Structure formats: C-alpha cells, structure tokens
Amino acid sequence: MAKILVIAEHRDGKLSDGTLELCKAAKTIASAMGCEPAAACFGKDDSIAKEVAKYIPTVFCVADAALEKYTSDGYAQAAKAVIDSQDVKGVLIAQSYDGVDFAAKVAMAMGAGIVSNCNKVAVEGGAPVFTRNTYNGKIQEQKKVKTDKFVATFEKGAYEMEAAGGAGAVTAVSASISNVRTKVKEVIATMAGAVDISQAKIIVSGGRGLKDGDKYKDVIIPLAKKLGGEYGASRPVVDSGWTEAARQVGQSGKTVTPDLYMAIGISGAIQHVAGMKGSKCIVAINKDPEAPIFNIAAYGIVADLFEVVPQLMENL
Image 1 (spheres, rainbow, N blue to C red):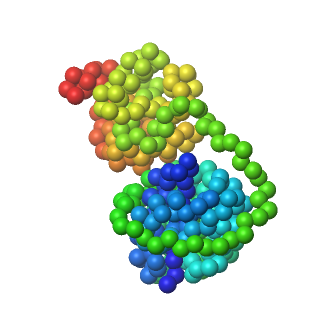
Image 2 (cartoon, rainbow, N blue to C red):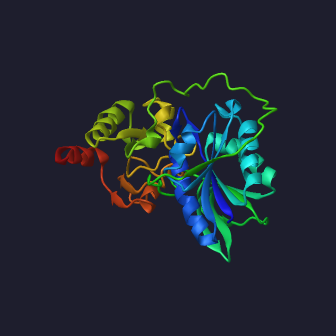
Image 3 (spheres, rainbow, N blue to C red):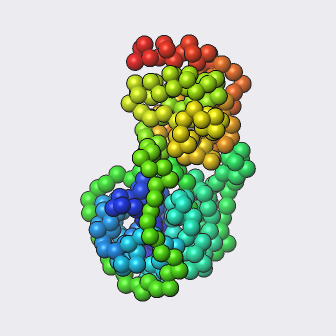
C-alpha cells in the first residue's frame, strides 16, 4: 500500500513537537487517500526510531554514523533510500530550520511537487489540496501539486500532537551516506540558557500598550507567573529592550501554539498574529475597540490594561 511518510525531526535524543503533529497529520491524510501512515527516522542508531514507533505504526530507520547530526545532504540521501525502497505517495516535513533546508532536495529526489508552510490539507478527488498563508498571513491560498507524488512542509500548530499508544514496527533501511559537503562541529543555542517559549502551554504577552519597560515587567511577568506560564512580547517591546529577543512572538520571532495566549496591550499587527494565531484560546486586553487583535481573540476586553490586570491578579 502507498504510504504517507513523515520525516522525523529530533535533537539531543528528543523528538520535536512538530514530528508528533506530523504523525497526526499523516494518519489523517492517509485515511482520506487510502494510504498507510508511516515515518522515517535517521540517526546513528535506531533508538529514536523506536520512540517514533510509539506514535505511528510503521517506521523506517536509516542508521549511519554520518547521520548522528543533521546535514541536508545526509538527510536527503537517507530519505531517498527510504522512498526508493517503498511506495511513497507523499512526504510530510516540519516547517523548521532543518526541514526547510532539505525539503526541496527530497522533492527533487522523488520527482515530486512541493508546497511549503502549510497549515491545513483537504483531500478532493483523491488528491491533496493544501492551504497556506501568504502576504504575511493576510490571506490564505490553496495549492495543488501537478505531480503524482508530493512533499509538504507544515507550520507548527497545524495539527494536534499525536498521543503515544502501542509500539509500531521499526524496519531498517540500508543506505550509503556519502559526499556530505558540510560537517557539524557543534550545535550552539541562539541564546544559551534562554527559555523556549514555543513549548509553553500558557503565554502572557505584552505590547507597546505597556508604555515602558518597568510597566512591562510589573504587569506581564507577575501575571505569567501567577498563571504558571511564560511571558512573551511583541517585536516593538523587544526592539525597545524591555525583554530579551528569545521571548519575541511573531513572524520574526517564535511561533507559539499554547493552550492559552493572553495578548495585553498588543494591537495585533499581522506580523505578530502570524506567530500566535494557532493558539487554542486567545484572550486580548486593549483599550482600542478597533484593535485587529480582537478579530482572532476568543475573548476580548476593551478596557485599560492597567485596571484590568490588577483585578485579574486579585481574583486568581
């Protein structure tokens, strides 16, 4: 049976949330297309592949010392080995730094069309129709590939994460990984010790409505801690030096999909919305009733944030 194949993404022995989301996507798409969901995992051994098998029934593993650390050449060769050994109809890749780096190579290797940065897919007449944002999220467009096979990259939060359940089968696939033109000497975090807010379940973000850095710290941080979450910010807040860049949410910052996102004093510019629109519940506080953030908020409070937030704190 033809397969919808997820390329698993992992680092330091841990699967990315994007991989778990793609496992859910693969099952949904495969069911609609009459295919089988599967995954491919690359590494120095099969330890991560066994972890992937908790989320999807069939996993193909290419184990090679050259795959211990990610390189686009290595992953493209490993992906081609799996694709050549199986009947693969489509490949799903996370819209991450690594995923964007090698996705086009996978498409070329299998002679498939590619659609990037997808947030939804529907199957019409047996063929996938992908939805993606364009013009900084102002509008959405639908895309089809003209080839029989396809590659698609999905943005974070496009699907719920698949829950672990049972143990799938791991099958070894042999591949000769050679001519890798880059060598990873060391992976350095952009900001050592900085929190990764993209993993937070609750985020309280502040914008220019806070007026200055002291008010941002006095209002946003205590509320975030009271709720047991993390605090974030819009780009103007970071540019003004009120908080560190690791906490910026938006097109030029982090993409987040928490259970609760509170936008306080944030107008809702499309660049910011692009990074948080996938949140499950959005609560906006802004004194401007015409603020664009209210267009996507589940709950909106039109009031002075300096009056509302203290009342929230008292009642929590």
